[in-house]
Image (cartoon, rainbow over all chains, first blue to last red; front, side, top):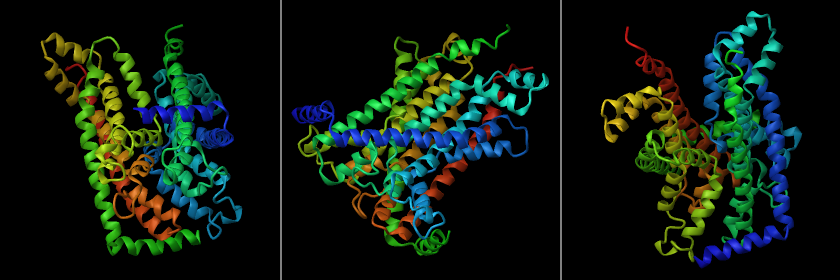
Length: 240
Length: 240
């Protein structure tokens, strides 16, 4: 037990003194989480709304496809994105392979399925008469989308938090596309993996692990609090 | 596009001709997935049922905890296992670190939350009267559990398949505790990471393709099951 205790003390000391490496990793992780989740949201929300609200043929097939893309192994996505970003690849002229921008891109690709798949699920969970009634009362596409978004906001927020959690925890794709250059395009999670490859058990690993755990717990906590408030929002649909 | 195409052309012969390295990784990956899912199911099903059906204090808290454990980053699980199994660590004398066995252990631990949380959710999603009625008619714990499992089987199978998906595509934990040793304890996903990090793109792509195909087969199974779920719900409607 002395071994574990020693590790924990070393790690906490690094965090307490604001070690610059730990700080830069934390900042990079926050940036990746915010940027790639925002990209995923901007692209994914309209698609999710179309799948959730549309009344066209093939809508179900699209939803199944969106659900399926949630299960894509990140390493596979990473390899494909890297081969597209390498200088000889289709988007090679952008020169963003092995940079933080490349990491933004692959993380956005990985976060997209969460938004696209969970938004329609949230909309389908709305009171069944609500959207039909809005349509009958003459709501246009735009008004309908706004209404659906407002009423399904807890579900959409859950999707965003799930996407953010995935971006924070992801390592495989980050290492493949970013190359994991120390202090340059590492996130907390990928740095943790890399540190273990070279020097097992030094206080940096424990410090990174503690910060990562704190960020994830914060996210899960937020999600739990938000979901527990679902009750009053549903109430509004019961007979006025 | 040319690069992706070239690498693809180089990758396909590797798969078709049954490269022995690739074959050994596939067989190890399938072993890991089978063991992890088996362990997670044997431990997770009873726990999930106890959370989903139980009527004791703290059940809600346990359900929350199970859901939260789904969001834990696999890197962190890897770090904790490393700190337990490393040379000087409490479980160090077992000499499990960097072996095949520790890969089985890590993937089983990562698969467990899926079975526990999703089984509990599936059981809780049953019509509220069903367990109540069975209890009123004198069903014991065992009969109740069997009934709930049978009726919630679509959700339970989805839980098992989600666990299988994680054990196939997760890399972070097994790289940390297993060491990602070439040709020894690599799974398809961790071998992809290894090959791409060594700039062996054709090898990496070949392995990624095999992994992608495995996942696609899994997803096909899930969507087939989801299509059947309609029929099962119907059985609860009142008999005419």
